[in-house]
Image (tube, rainbow, N blue to C red; front, side, top):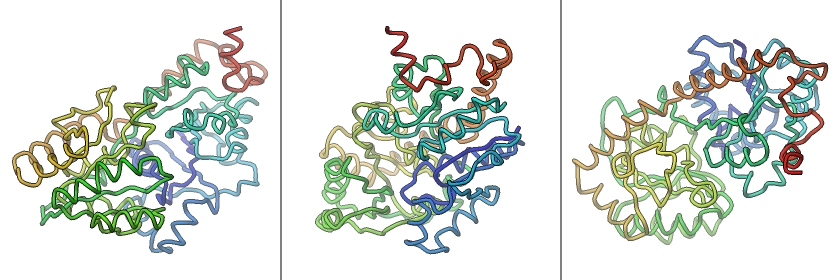
Length: 395
């Protein structure tokens, strides 16, 4: 089967956490025998920032770790017809321009035979719905949402049984415990500062507890303004700058533990969606302490796969326990690895995607061939934009 995935960037993970999962799941699909092509706009924002930060050497970890992946850079001003020629499945990620999303949809509406899915891995559906409503998804066959609470948003917008929850996962070909254990010291946190979405949480659940527990703290990431760096310095944390995601397993292997601090939207309005670092950290066998987060989809086993902390004092206590109790560390590592390996690898997600595609194509066969507009009778009117169907039903 030929699969085409339109992403903002596969080459670059600079402030682009979606690249982590996509790299892993696309190469798993290749390993399963499929013809997979990733497409990204030439000169995209993430890649431009990576090259400015690390130069061409910043791409070396990706090239060395993912030799199977060779993304195609396309000119956004040129038609994309040739990129999807003979495709069986096309997926468009939400971090693409509305014009690209609409262009691929028009190809589907005009009779292209591929199945077309929109992949949403962000909180904008609730934090900035007007941005999401700029996308014309009227010809899309369905939605892939990275959490059940996000799927519910799309169901409320009229997608009903044409939205599937498709969680992120760990690329265990890359993210795994070190072959030989070395010396571990202190805490590490790998994450970007963002736009103030979790400033108070980072100070309350990471910087201050690490200092109170007497554990040195290394911070990796980008977009840290001067005030953020001043906050790190106040708490004695060491800012290490950007690190390519492919080097994260080695970074984890040098540290005693890490902390999960979810962005505010994933702790409140869209509960149940962990950051990709939870999957990656557990896959690497590093003990994890988590700030408050409602695992309402039961992805993990709180208290076994990681330690829950209700506030800063509890976080400090958990960090001290992890530092002092070798048996506790071993138990957390073993349990976390078991959960990842049995439920949350990119190979699992590749199989889930293929099952979703089978469900869609089976349904389309039952409905018969597309009409003259290229849409099966049960799909939305191509003239409708998302949300219109729900409004028509309500009226």
